[in-house]
Image (tube, rainbow, N blue to C red; front, top):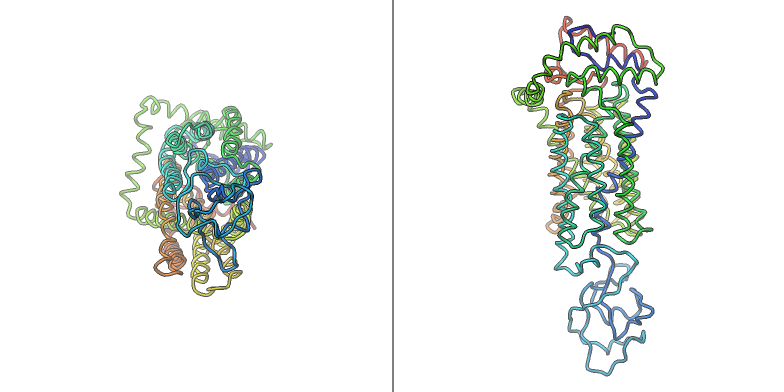
Length: 567
C-alpha cells in the first residue's frame, strides 16, 4: 500500500516496503543502545561517589599506625557500638571512650578495658575498613551531623531528573529526537567529568544536578527513537532490549570495587561517552518526527537509504509522493508559527477530550506507583548481607528477567494484561513478604526478588504502553511528562521505610496496596497491541473504540496483514 498525494503519510505502511526491523534499523538501534549503558551507570553513580565508607575512630592508645586494621579484638573495649544476633560487633563511627588516667603506652597494638572509662567523646581521626574513597573523605563529611549532606546528593539527583525529563521531552518534539539525544549525551559526559574535578561540596552538587539533567534525557529519547524506527510487531522488542542495556549499565557500577577512588570512577563513566559525538553523522533523525513536521523530502532520503541497506525495493508512487507532499507543504513551512503551534494545538485537544484526560490520569498514577515501589524495594535491598558491590550488581541484574517477563507478556497477552499482571505479581509478593515470612530470611529474599521482578516488568511495559497511546506530535513530550511525574513519586520512596517504625510490615503492605490499585486501574486502558501508532489526537482517542465498517479499511487491512504474518 502506498500513500496517495494529498493524504498524510503512514510510516507503518511505509515499513511494509522497507522492512519492520531490517539491517538498517538493527544497526541504528544498536547505536542508540550504547549510550544507555553510560546513562544507567551515571544515573546511579552517586550511590558510590557519595557513599558512606566503613570507618571508626582512630584510637592512638591502641592502634598501631604502621598496621592499621578496622576490625580488632580489642575494639569493643575502646569504642561504643552495637551487637547483632550473630554476635558481630559494629563500632560507632565517630565516638570513642575517654581514656582513663592510667599511664598508657601509645600505639603498641595492645588494649585493655582498664585503659578507658565509660564516658564517650568525639574523635578527630579515623580508621577505614576498606580502600574506598568517596566525597566523605574528600570534604570531611563524616559523622551523623553531615549525613543530610550525603542524602541531599540523592535529592539533587532526582531534582535534575525531574527538570531534564520535562524539558527534553518538549525539546525533542520541537527540534527533533536526534539533536536533543546527542545534546543530552554530551551534557552528561561533560558534567560527569566536572563532578570529578569539583573543588568543594557546593560545586559538586551543582555539577551533580546538571549531570542528572543530561542523563535524564538519554534513555527516554533512545526509547522514543527506537520505538519510532520499527514496525508494530517489533515495538515491544525495541523497548525491552533497551532495558537490557540499562540493567547491564547499572550492574557495571559493581565494578567500582576495582575503582575505589570516587574520582577515578566518575571519570571512567564520563569520558567514554564523548565518542558518541560521531552520531551526528551516523544516526538518522526519526522518520516519524520528520513526517509529523512535514519534512517529507528529508524523510524520503532516509527511507530510500533504509530500503537500500535492507535490500528492499520502493515503489515509484511512494517516492513521488514524498516530493509532491514536500511541495504542498512549502507554503506551510514559510509560516513557522503554524508548525510551532502544532504541539500546543495537540495539547489543547488532549485537554478537551474527557477520554484522554481519564486515560492519561490513570497512566500518571501507574507511573508514580512504579517509581515509588521500584526505588522503595531497591532501598530495602541494601539490607541484604554480603559484599555490597556484588549485591548491587545482582539487584540490578535481576531486572533482566523482569524485562524478559515483560517481553513475553507483551507478545502473548498484549499491553493491558501484561501491565496489570506485573503489578498484581508485585502486590502479592510485597504483601506476602510483609506477613508470611516473619523470620524466614530465605523466603523474604525470594519474595523480595519476585517483587522487584514484577515491578521491573511493569516499568518496562508502561514505557511501551504509554508511547503507543500518545500521538506522534507530542509522543516524546508525553512520555517525558509521565516520566517526570514518576520521578516526583520516586522522591517519596526514601521516606516509606520510615513507616516501619510504626508497624514493621507497613512499608511492604503499602507497596502491595498501591500496586494492587494500579493493577486494577490498568484494566480500564485500551489495548494497543498490533495497532498502528496514532499520529494525531483523533487517532489516539479512537484507540480501543469500535469504528464503523466505513472507517476501518486502512487500519483493519494493515492489522490483518500483520496478524497473517504472525500466523
